[in-house]
Length: 481
Image: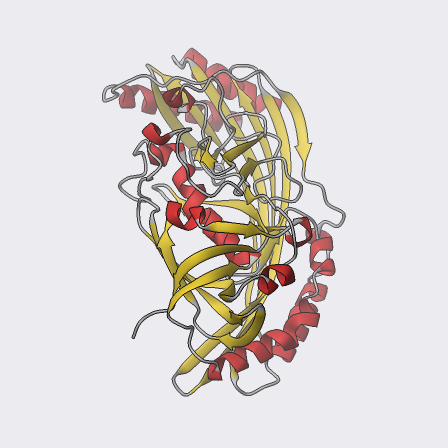
């Protein structure tokens, strides 16, 4: 691929670019879905293309193509420079890139079994077996199960001398059972809702996940929710399971930490952030036990990589340390706006045909101590919730409401009854400041988010959030009727 990358960079510089980079991406994906005993989804997609990004006259230009030939490389590089020069007629200030050392490296996802080498009949057979268990009761009206696999082979070269090859492999699986009786509809999912669990591993993840073993429990919980009482209304000490807490981290810590959002770059679409730069490094975001780490190096994370699309090496750092807000998610372009000398390595694009932007890397709430059973035993009047159902949060990431699939009311240290439609709401800093207990490493795990949306045109990105169950004091739960 070096012949292509060198031609692109030479062409861009000769046309007047002061900086240029090219990303070539060869990607493939497979999605398999079974619904009510029938195959609903069977997609195999492949794409090969490149995107060229340049700075000319102080402005960005970008162009892409799916035709990987030398003539098309030259045409696309020339077009990118023309776009940059046209954009420069309206620029207010010149693009300034933070320093990054030159890198020449190869990075590959760790895996044991390439899922694309596993026979299709093996995958479908497992989904059919899950489906059969889920639909053993006539109250289950909808049973859905699926698997997803992605592989991206990337080459990045810059006019500064960087040349990086990366091969990323991700997979996911999950299922749900929807029970219906009269006007009542309830759903349970496994391993998590919204498509299940996703991870940077090979097919060994599917083999190690007890999918079939949990299908009966999931079915019976969906049915039990039909007659369960509604979530109580009022203030409760709220214990949130790891999967739901992962989404809480994503929405109320991850998104407001994106520096482009803070600076107003996403205001017309995705919104802004309440963590304005005047609060930087001086804001009590959470209670002192809360430590939140951004980490593109953690094994198996969906946003684990060697280098981002700026060519910045993967890093690990605190976003929140002992309750204090410490650092935004940054790229090379905007690092200087907060007086940082180097990017935090958060620039990524969805495929070859989109320009990179600041995206979350893996963001995790660090564990403290104790088990979930210990935490429940230490709670007098509470509610334990897990597995997301719906959510809503305002454009500044302050006011939120979440509903989960299932909850259990806690009285005097014991789970006393299952409740349906458990809902809680709050204001982000007040909520995180109320956190008084986080379980230990034995309860901590990474939860994948494979479909985070941002940007215009819209882009999808993947990331993971590590969490262990945690307790939040005096949270408003339930919905008044």
